Length: 115
Length: 117
Image (cartoon, rainbow over all chains, first blue to last red; front, side, top):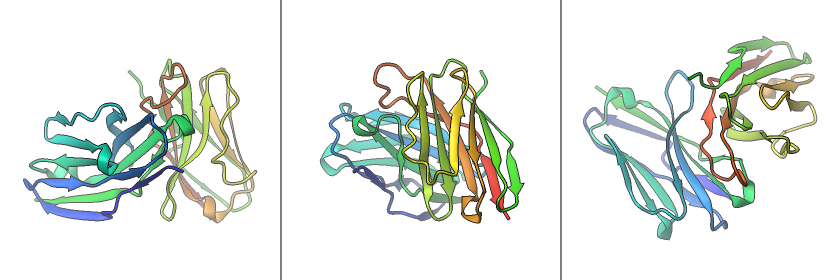
């Protein structure tokens, strides 16, 4: 069975602090994909990144960076110099060859960035 | 271009009534998904349509739930005899899928917030 765990339910930081959101996954598939989505207060899920199991290169996009480590089954997300607009619920998700199409979501981490 | 659209945005109904939720996927996307987001259960997969293949209904919680996709585009999720525990946000997503359909990015609509009184 596949599973995604986001152990941090809520995180509160002050603007300009760096923050890391943890994601740990379980799967028996050799081919799988990991995702991060952002859900701002408006409610719509916004796609941030997609990673496949064969590409362990870390990725940076502006203030966002992702650290994928197969050895620890983790796909952590770091926001550098956080801003108030980063306040949202962040979801990590997984899909693989054994559950074609379905996204398995973690429970989400609520990030509050205070001015 | 236009994203995934859903209607209505909000729906309030009485217990026992039927409701229909609509999803318009991104033009050209071959796969369409329904998910449900509720406080107690998080984000749950409901059903998946891929092209002309039989849908994957493995996530539907009961036989009161059904969905169809007409002409490979618009989809309707129907909940019959609604119960209070059906109250949730129903999210639709679509993706462009080729081959086995594994791992393509799903783009989500704004959701329909359903409240069953």
